[in-house]
Amino acid sequence: MTARHFAVVPAAGHGVRLGGAKLLLPLFGRPLIAHTLVAWQKSKVERTIVVVRPVDLSLAQVVKELGAELVIAELPPPDMKASLQFALRHIQANFAPEDTAAFLVAPADMPQLSTSIIDRLIECHRLHSPGRVLAPTLNGRQGHPVLFPWRLAAEVYALGNDEGLNVIVERNQAVLVPCEDLVAKDEYPFADVDTPEEYQRFSGS
Picture 1 (cartoon, one colour):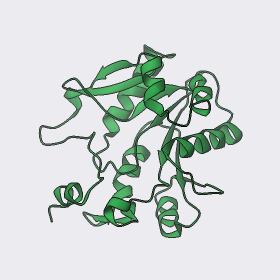
Picture 2 (cartoon, helix red, strand yellow):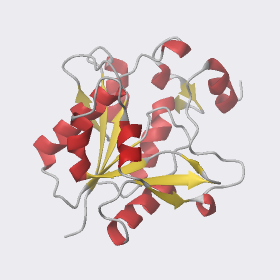
Picture 3 (cartoon, helix red, strand yellow):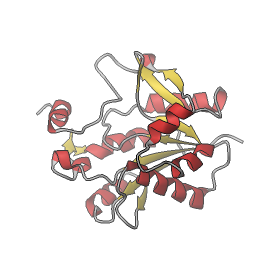
Picture 4 (cartoon, helix red, strand yellow):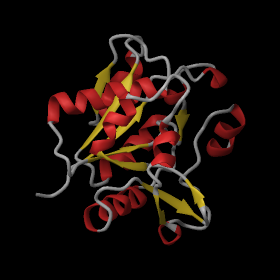
């Protein structure tokens, strides 16, 4: 049986450093989150699961229009970890992933997220490292998305209050997957948008 892969996109943050509604900021004619979701939708993942807050109706509409699977948290998740836990429970309840499955995680605000890198991780998982955490690198620098074998969902649920996914990556000694050959010289697909300066750099404004 071919391994199944699920993308998890936590989109329930507040974006306070950019004045709120960060993921709806316009970038080259469409919302910021659209660039991220299109990369996932073009990849070999089976489903793209996006977690949003119940009050973010405009964001929810964009997610649905782009064909991703919208999951509205009953209560606003306090952090990214809570969003991930909510998404994994949704996947477990609705798709019953096998032990061979995996989930991939990247922030929602990565406008240059690379479909080619996503697919390389999936290929490595299927052919070479079915039980390992996989992380892409560019010139030795680690980035997103990160692939986790489904068995590690239990470790996500068990994370402590002050622990994040990086704890699981380190504990399980992630396999680093070089991806330099997949990226053009002027691109940096690991970049995200957290500040007004970063948004201006991406938008050219």
